[in-house]
Image 1 (cartoon, helix red, strand yellow):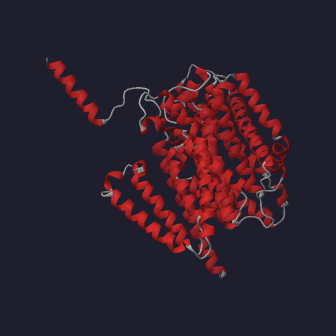
Image 2: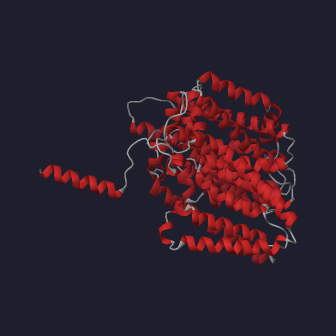
Image 3: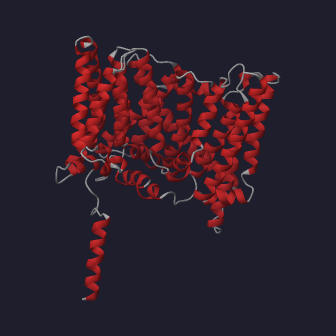
Length: 526
């Protein structure tokens, strides 16, 4: 590529980044009144200028070797993010005081409270990381360092969910019991936790030759957006409708009852969020455990792109920044505070592990048990994760230069989706007519493709069947506690009740509401 072409592409990339940034500003102004007023008052211009200037200065500093790259570790990133975070928190404090003028709170006290909440949130995550590292060490599971750390946290959160489920069933979710669980995780995984903290604070995060300018722009832009999200987690309610009525309500109910609550669909992540209420009496920590998932998504996506897909680090950083700046991400990060971002982190980690196992053609069963555990945890958080499980099953049947078996598995899974109406998650299932005919045709096509490979690949087929069955069995086991709970609460053994739990009130739909309205009119006329 010529120098002129490279220059033109650089200017195009810069222009696109600026246009996208302006679009995000517009989106924020529509969805978040706090952002809109802050932008109007020039409150965000300071962090934005800091983002741009830092992105332009750092490549020059590294190129001229004014500061060695080994000093560009997480601690320098933390300093930058801390400056941005302090700015955002000051804005949040100003907004809080404008709504409650009689409430007196100093900037130092407000920032100190947020630091305490962040420390408590990190304590929960580090404890989970300790559990996961301990289990991986006991199982002798060897993974690349980047993947191992992602899996350790995901596995540790799974372990925390299982412990919370057992303790909740016994009515033992008290403050001192949760303290004991957190301390146990830190003690079991203390060496791994210490190495993680050392890596984050003392090791360079920048390649020896440094990033391209757009890599730094992506990193600092991503930091800016993520810090805005974390700052919004400690502001006053109400948040989004779903957050206020379901995802933040259930952790509070769990803390009040000191155990599981009756009804509702599986609330796995709410169990983990309830640690904020039970251990620290802090809804802010519960919120941070949700919005912190956005930071984990950014880390997991970057690690997957660089270490597994072998993408350019600078392009990967810019790609992550563009992804987390989309409205669907930022709304979940700072407004709704639901379960989607932690769930997305688990999906990326599960996909990362599955791709690794397939490419390396790993045969040890303990790795596939681990894959089933992560899939089961995702299913327990949100049943729509079954679509990820279907994709992983198709990928497990992949064989180099042979596409027949994956296509057969794809046909079988698609027929199951149509037959059991799993596509109703999208709300578009009513558009599909003759679904059972299509399902039968897909089964026949899958059988035909399987027969074509049955003789030549019978040993491989048997091996894949065992692995697929193992993954599904382990994943189902992680979801089974919710089925047991729901069956014990349901008066009728309907599929909807077993999956979504006993209804906590009368179920209404539009037709029923219209009927009730007409009946009320008749009553008034009489």
